[in-house]
Length: 339
View: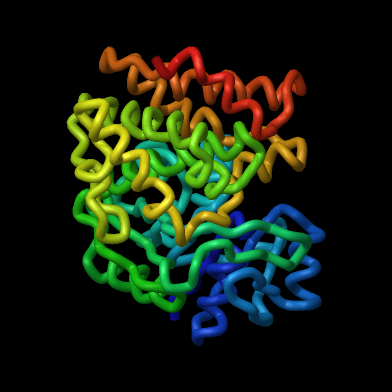
């Protein structure tokens, strides 16, 4: 019988583990946060927000791990990927796979450690917040939940189908032939709404539903698309919507139309609190370099200016150093870049 684990079972991982367990699956939820693990052991996974359920789960700290896993769903921050994946390699079956559900473009780095034949990627199309130990808030509408999953060279169809079946215990899973395109589409969403949501100290809706923030957001999206296209990326649809057709404007008039579409496109995810902001509130380093930072890095590689993303990185690093704090009025820091 196959063994499954979620490594880094924080907000997203706890919600996912609760769904899988409630719907008949068996999976270990592993997290370094001892108080969270103890709460899960004692009270089960308590999921609030757009759903309400309490599910008894199998929860462990890394030092309690034993044996080998056939599938490890990876949900830690990318900051320590080299250390984490090297650690997990000893707990991965010879034909097992690590499925990264992380932000950014993590697959190549993971494949360098465990091999492309043991690496899969999955884009998460929903959000959650860790409210307190053992308690997570699902912030996306239940009908909007989905995964987009792809594989690297060497993954068997049987293993892919097994992982797909596992994740379908929570919500629909779409096979993504264009994994890099799906990654870039999610990166565009995260760079824009997680990045700017963190800048203003709010949720996605504080960006999509604020006129001044939308003016910045559409330019952030455009930078991401310009960089991706320069790199030869074909952006994958997001929940059936062709984001380049909607938002890749060529004229000022089309930019205005695209800007007006933003609150409609983000309505079902308006309550998502950026994970970067969650980290900053806990005085932890955030993933800015793996999100907006990677857009900037690829922009430099291909000669595409990224002033909005550069400014987002600059502001959030100021937050990390304690030089500034997230608040709504910080959106004016982009005024000089809008033209």
